[in-house]
Length: 486
Image 1 (cartoon, one colour):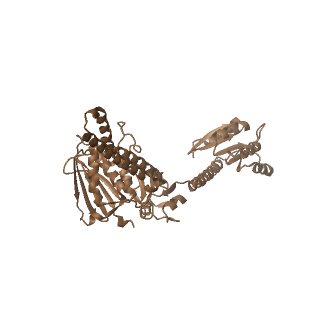
Image 2 (cartoon, helix red, strand yellow):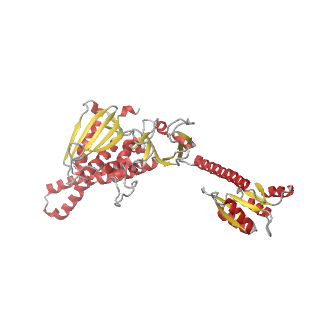
Image 3 (cartoon, helix red, strand yellow):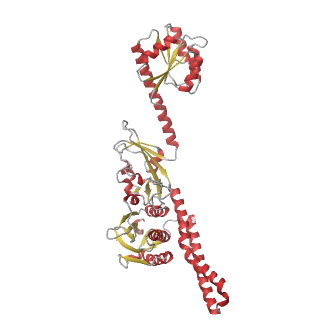
């Protein structure tokens, strides 16, 4: 809605137009004028004025006809018309009312009466327009698939559309209910640092922010992206919040990343003996004895069997029914040692120290995450450690401990320290991030954002920090135990 009030003056007498403009000068109005009915209709269509001051007695098209045409135009039908007339007989006023006039004022003008009438009419008209805008807003908001809430300065909910109440599992939200307390009953706010200062983004690095209802033994994970707009300071309404269901987007991106990770890290190793063996045989088959030839074929056969197995695993994992099956293939702590060895060998990382600080009996406990997901997470973390190490030969440490109802996994390297800005953006993928002042994209790529989504998906937590004892970097994951998700 426009903020200024536009008044259209319609009179065939120049002196009458000048008189009205003089009386209304310095009153905060935007004034326009027309000298006849046809010009008035044209200007009204262009300006959509807040009020039309319309003279009755005009040649060719009088004020009554102009008013009737205005009321016949859907765009202009709601514009208030104040008829200006020297006629004070009853019949003229009745004709004006039948034509659609809202009010009358007689010549000569009483400037105080004129200003008071216009002030009242413009205020009522603005209120009417605001009411219409509100009705349209509420109609659109009620029909949308997104959830919308309006909060006051104390972050208390003063409006919620049906979709918001559906997402928050309530039929009514009490006026004194604070937004973060309400969503905290069933959602985790992620990333946690992004919510440290409440609704306002103190650090723009934390975009986007999510509400995550973690996966349980009975229901899938559910993701809402949160967008917050701060409204005017002079209004009771302080924040407009949109909650958008991005569960499918997160899942699709994770599947894409999984496929890429499987191709990069799982197929390279079994392909190597096949391709290398074939190339060697091609160039040296005449010089090889039968035992040597058999040995080469055995190595290549083992590679092909392993390759077939890895491809079948990839296809199995990418099958939607398998990915969405709750609790499938949960990871046991005892699996991690062999997993670490395999990943380090695949990535040609020479030194990985595993420190398992849980008891031997506890090693048989399941984590509420699939074995394949843990393998993907560790592969991503190991791969990043190698990629960003100055010599690409990191010494890695993997610490496993129990913390309350979670398993704490720390992956430490001896590479570089990250700046505070890089640490803030570490869980944001390139496709989500904005370019910085150098034109470079921040963050660590798609991988770490997918690591965080896998962890948040099950109600876990993840954080990253620089090592204090030496150069290097630590990624810490808290993964809930299986028995806490029943």
